[in-house]
Image (tube, rainbow, N blue to C red):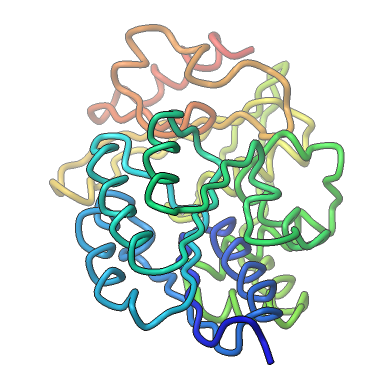
Length: 307
């Protein structure tokens, strides 16, 4: 007889979140008879939506579970205290574990623990999981999350699995989670083939410029591949006269990444103030949006600033 009857895992929806969810489920199954999970975009994938709406649905179901585990879902930094208050309400209903690797103020942690929440804040994406990490799959998840702390453990095979994981979570998150639980590597190796290979490239010092036409969905993944193939630290891609998905207006898009295994400064830190004002995204993966005709000029400036 297991210690718990019904348990629930609530996880994020990117590649790392899928691994964290799957391995948490496997670990929880050792002590719980029935394990359900919620990992669905946008419900648990868009953080403001999660803490504004989804968390209320989970609270309604909380009494049906002996244990609830939240994994890889950061508190909303814009409504930090409100997010913590909503989580504390679930902690008051049932045994609740919260495992994450994003920074949490000590006073918020103490507040949650006052309500019985078992809070674990990890330093790495690798061990952001309920229970012990899986030696293979948690590395795959950390690669998907571009976690530099595990760079010395990265292999071509693990990178291939991470590529396939990033593809599959966009298509069928449940299938990805199930394949991780069942250790089906072949599923991810097949999906990895969908990421286009860059062929038309120019290397300028530590920067590679990709000239191939890249589907919008794959830009960052292809730029990462270009860095892997050429040994460059940064990759740039220009997409001209592309329609803005919100306004429908034509724009030039200049995308740039720092290869996640490089120890060079972030893309954002290398940009001039002018370019920073027009850029958005992760510090190591920026997109600069300008009016049509300015893209080539911006790409040249970027090349000068990065090499």
